[in-house]
Length: 108
Length: 114
Figure 1 (cartoon, each protein chain N blue to C red):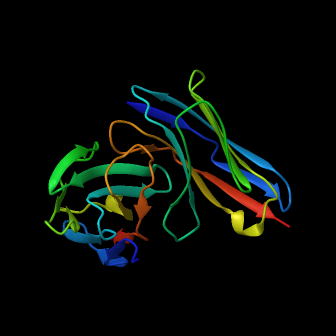
Figure 2: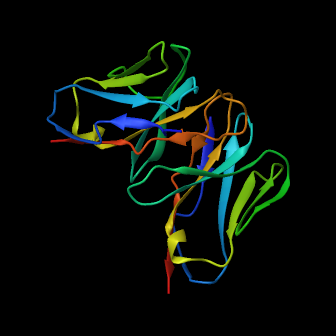
């Protein structure tokens, strides 16, 4: 089975940097994914890591350490529109298993 | 290209009733998966279909069922509704499970059971 942990809620200031951590314990691993979900909207894909290291995509970066069962999503130059829930998901044989999500609140 | 379409967007039912939700995937996508989302449990996997076959199933009771048609459209059904079934039901589609993990979600069907 899969066990995925991430903080329930985080707050940060506009313009700052925030790191959202995700730890996982899985019986099989086929990549780690991050999704963003604004209130009342569908989740949208942010990133995918299958090898150790950092993947950068604009203001967002995602890191993976498979030996530690650990990932983080780094958001730079925070904007108000980044207020959303961030879902960590671990891929298994087919469909990824999602964590409960981290609600990020960005304030001025 | 049109996204994933789910209908109805909102519905209210009473305990004991049954409900059918519909999902039209992105054109060309053959894999459709369903999730239940609640504040307490997050996104929980219900089942996944590919080419009209259920390939994976989550840990939900038999009251939850689904199917996929030859045009890849999918339906899920919940029978004998309980209060705890109140949730947002999300459908996601992808070409196939190809390890990139990019699922395309619909906006969901919000079910309220009274």
